[in-house]
Figure 1: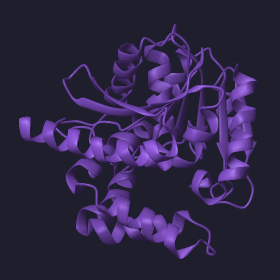
Figure 2: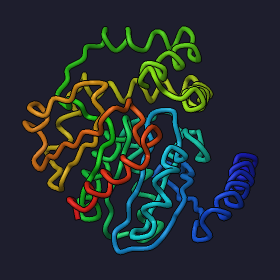
Figure 3: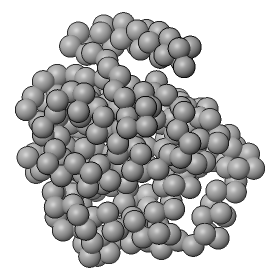
Figure 4: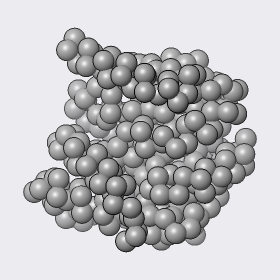
Length: 288
């Protein structure tokens, strides 16, 4: 454990030097989740309302590098590495969406935040929904990015196994194929390489555990039941790579808004950062 803490602190120190060259206001912290996992995060800017960014499956807070500085002029912006990702610790036995929600809760408590908008990509969309349910007095809105295309989608155990099998057989190849399919055909090679290598470098067993917990919600029905206790605005910023069923979503989400970002794949914050930032700011203002 001491060795792990040392590695985290060294990595964060190096990152801090690099980030400080671009933004002297950036600072880094570690919060302790309810199961003692160490949750690394960064803070930029100031504001009464905090924007808390949550990455998707097998990624980390670097996903939001094009957003944090842009939005920190008006808001306090926090980007979190969930447990099992990035600079956070990797000791959890089961990486559920609720456990990730408690990672967010730990950071909100550590920073003394009373008003937060949660922004989550892909798997992060399910995480922020659980966090909104967990902290109704702290979360004033949630914004999903290319996620929750149909919260009432029904999967079987057999279908989940078929989806997980390629990752269990050859994790790196399956991950690279997944990332390639998640981008449009004209994606920049450097971007495709960075995301592919980053996601494929995740610890296999941890990544598959997260994958099964994430999609397992669509077997149990928690994917839509979670919204029963969510009364704050829910905004989706989705690409058109995979169809979004607003008709189904509206059956379960009380305060629902959908915006499309055109001509991108699953990673609009990387593919078209300027257009995405403007649309995200519009969504934030609609919540506040």
